[in-house]
Length: 76
Image (cartoon, rainbow, N blue to C red; front, side, top):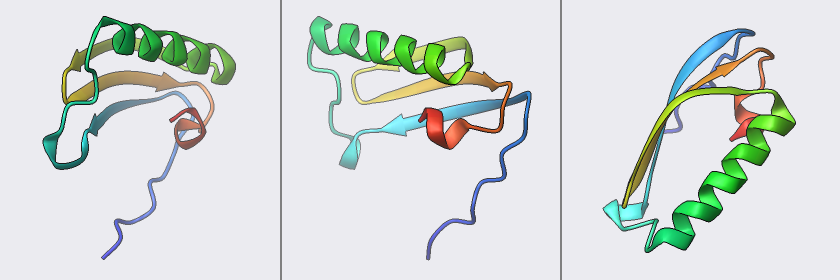
């Protein structure tokens, strides 16, 4: 069964979690983390999202993002 659609609000805070399939590693080295940071920076700038904090681990990430516009799905 699919999850319900996420309702997005302006000026909302979201705790975003993304995990590798079956708990597998998604960052294999420093260059993977660097590419992720650059992509995240570009996306924040393009979509106007404020990233308050983050935690990157080898097999998943946590982000605390604020969206001035209701555009979390576009940002992700």
